[in-house]
Amino acid sequence: MQNKEIQEQRIKGYFLEAAKEMLKGEGLKSINVRSIAERAGYSYTTLYHYFKDLNELIFLCVKDFQDECEQFVKEEVKKEPRGTEKIKAITKAYIQYFTQYPGIFELCFIEKISNIGSKQPTTELIATFPDRLCSEEWKYCIDKNIITKEKVDIFTKQLRFTVTGMLLLYLNRMQPADYKEFIDTVEIQINQILNI
Amino acid sequence: MQNKEIQEQRIKGYFLEAAKEMLKGEGLKSINVRSIAERAGYSYTTLYHYFKDLNELIFLCVKDFQDECEQFVKEEVKKEPRGTEKIKAITKAYIQYFTQYPGIFELCFIEKISNIGSKQPTTELIATFPDRLCSEEWKYCIDKNIITKEKVDIFTKQLRFTVTGMLLLYLNRMQPADYKEFIDTVEIQINQILNI
DNA sequence: TTTGCATAGTTAACAATGTTTATATAAATA
DNA sequence: TATTTATATAAACATTGTTAACTATGCAAA
Image (cartoon, rainbow over all chains, first blue to last red; front, top):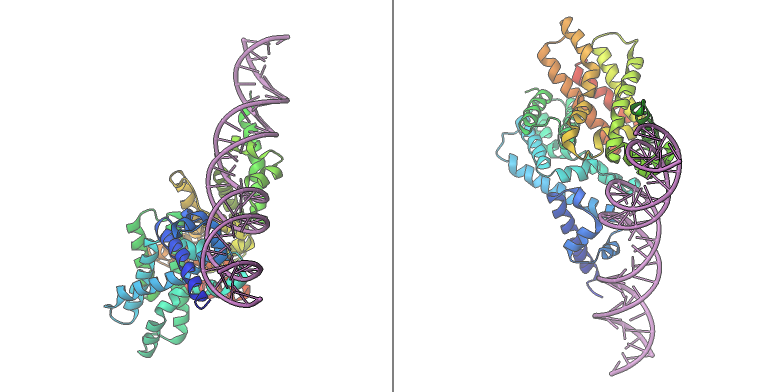
C-alpha cells in the first residue's frame, strides 16, 4: 500500500512515453488507444484506468513537449548577441522545432480539445508559449531603451500571430510548397516585425 | 440519355447543399456520410456514386464558401474610402465572416486534406484568399504612390499570416477567451501592419 | 493459515463512422 | 418484349473510441 501513487505515475509514464514517441514519429494520425497501449505493453482498456479518455492522455503530452522545445531553443540561441537579434533567433528556432515535428504542431494548435472548460489553462499555455520564450529578452530591450514597454506588447502579439499563421499554412496547407521558400518568408516577416 | 451530365450535377448539388448547410450550422463535427445523405434525401452509399469519398465532397464546398465570403466582404466595405482604410475594412470583414461560421474556418484551414497531391490548387486557393480580396485595393495604393510595389508584397503576406494566426488561436484555442478582447486585438494588429 | 476484498488487468461487446460489395429496381435500347 | 445499362439501396466489413463484465493477484483481517 505504501507506494501506490508512485506506481500509478510509473504506469501513466509508460503510456505517455509511448504516445509521445508516436506523436514525434508518425504524428496524430497513427495514434489510437490500441496502438498506444500496445507500445506501452498493456491491453488497450487498461489505458482507461489511468486516463479519463484518449484526449486527456494526448494533451498531457503538451507540457512535456513545451519543455523539450524550450530546451531546444535555449541551446540553439545561446551564442546569439542579446536584444532583437536574439529574439529573432529564438523565433526561428521555435519554428524549426515545429517544422521538425509536425505532429507536435498538430497536437498543440490543430487538434480539437474536448471538454474545453477544464482545458482553459492548457490552451492559454499553448497560445502564449512563444511569448514566454522571448519575454526575458524583451525585458532586456526595455532596460536598454531599445524599445518602449507599450511597443513590446504589440510586437509580442505580432510575432505570436504571424508565426502561428505561417506554421499553420506551411504544415497544414503546404503553402508555400517548398521548404526553402518557407524559410525565406520567415526571415522576411521576422525582420519586418522587428524592424531590422 | 440526353441530359445525363445535368442530372448528375443536380444530384451532386443536393449533397453539396446538405453538406454546406451543416458546415455553416453545426460545423465539421456534425458531418458524416450518413447525416449528409439523410439531409440530401438519399441513402448513404449513394454518396459514393457521385464522390470519390467524403473528403472530396467537403472540400468541394470550399469554392462556394469563398464566393460567399467574397460577396459578404464586398457588401460590407462598399462605402469605405479607398486605400488603406478599405484594406483594413476588408480584413475585418473577412475575420467577421469566419467568426460567424467557425465550421468554415475549420474546413478551410484545420481539416486534414487527404490525397494532397491533387488538392494543391485548393490549398493555394485557400492560403492566398485574403490576398486576392485586397489585391485590387493594393493596386490602387501603388497607383496613388501611397506605397511601393515591394512593400505591398510584404504587407500582403503579413496580413495573411497575422489574420490566419489570430483566427486559429481564437476559434480553435479560445485565445483570447473574450470576443471583445479579440476584436480589440484585431484592430490593433491591423493598424500596426498598415501603419495607421 | 485461510478467507475475503480491493486493485489491476483483460476479454468481450457495443456504438459510431467510412467504405466496399452485392443486389434490386428503374430506365433505355435493341 | 427482352436485354442491357444506370441508379439506388441493403448488407456487410474495418477501424476506432468507449464501457461493462469477468479474472486474477496480492494484501489484510479473522
